[in-house]
Amino acid sequence: MGMTITEKILASHAGKKEVKPGEFIEAKVDVVLGNDITTPVAIESFEAMGAQEVFDKEKVVIVPDHFTPNKDISSAEHCAKVRKFVREKGIKHYYEVGRMGIEHVLLPEQGLVAPGDVIIGADSHTCTYGALGAFSTGIGSTDMAAGMATGRVWIKVPESIKFIYHGKRNPWVGGKDFILYTIGKVGVEGARYQSMEISGEAIDELSMDDRFTMSNMAIEAGGKNGIIAPDQTTLDYVKGRVKRNYTCHQSDSDARYTRVIDIDVSQIRPQIAFPHSPGNTHPVDEAGHVLLDQVVIGSCTNGRIEDMRITAQILKGKQVHPYLRLIILPGSQDVVKQMIQEGIMETFIESGAAVSTPTCGACMGGHMGVLAKGEKSLSTTNRNFVGRMGHPESEIYLSGPAVAAASAIAGRIVHPKEVF
Image: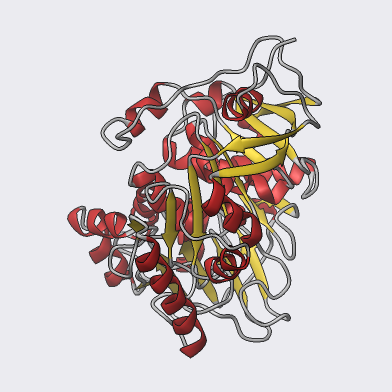
C-alpha cells in the first residue's frame, strides 16, 4: 500500500521507510515558529526544562505580530521578554516592527519554509505552509519549547481526506470561497486531526496566494494540516526565495484515504460565513440585507498582494460608505511596498480606507478594529466565533476580498457585481 504526501514527509523526517495513520513518531523539524503571544510562555517552559541553547539558530523563527506595535504595557512586556531571549540565544530569524509581517505571510515570502519541510508553530494557522507541499501544523507553547531545545516533535500520524476540486470557477470566486464552501460542507470538525489533501484541476489553476488561503483555513475544519502537492506554480514561487535544498513529494496512486470528497467549483458562488462559525456558510446572494459597521481586509488568510489588488480593483474611483470604517491590514512590509509601487495605496486612501502596518490585532480582537456591542463586521479573516473581534454581542461575517471591498462601498453585504 502506498503513502500520502503527508505520510511520506513524516516518514522521511522520522528516519523510517514508511509510517501509517495512528502511529506515534518522533520527527525532525525544519522550522520552529513563535509569535509575541506564544513565545513568552514557550520561553518559560524552555527554561524550566533546563535547556541552555536552541537546537539551531537558523531554524527558530520569531515574529512579533499579534499585539505589535505594542498596544499597551502588558504587550510591551511580552515583546521585551521575547527580544531578550532572541539576543541571548542568537536567533537569526527575528523580525522586528518595521521589518516584520504577519507570520504566515512573511515566512513563505522570505523563503524560510519549503516543500517537503516539517514545520511546527505555536499558532494554529501554521498549517498555511502546506500550500508549498510541506507538513506544517500548529502546536502549543510547551511543544514549541521542546522543539526549540531538541529540533524534534512527537506526533501522531494523521489519517488523510482527499479533496478533489474540478470545474471552472465563477467570477469573483477564489481560494477563500473554495475553503469556506468546503468547511460548510464538512463542518468545523469534519476533518478533525486529519490531513486535508487538496487537489484537482481547479487547484492547479490557483495562484500561490489562493493556495495559501486554502491551507491556512484547514484548521477551521479541524484539520491537522492542509496540504497541496508541489507543481510548477510552487516551484516558480520558491525559486529565488528558498536558499537551501528541499524535496518535493507526491502521494502514491494507491495511497490510503478515509474519504475522497469531490467538489465541482462551478457550483460555488462567492461565500459568506455567518455568525458564529466558519462552517455557517451561504452564497452571498442569499445574505439578505445585512448592514455593516466595519469591514476588515487582510490577515494571514487574505493579506497578500493579490488580495490587495482585488480590493483596489473594486475600490478604484469609489468611496467607502460614510457610516462604515474599512480597515486594511497588509500581510507584510513587502506587500506594503508593492502596494505603493502599483498605486494601490493611493487608491485605498482616496477611497476612505485606513491602512495599517502588518498586524494580527484586528483578527483576534486585540487592537486595530475591536468591535463594540451590537456592531457587525465583514472580514477576510479566518474566524467568526462569539467575541472573536471584540464584544461578545457583536457579529462577524467572513468572506473573500472581492465581497468585502464591494460591501465596504455599499454599507451592507453585497455581491461584487452590485458595485463593480
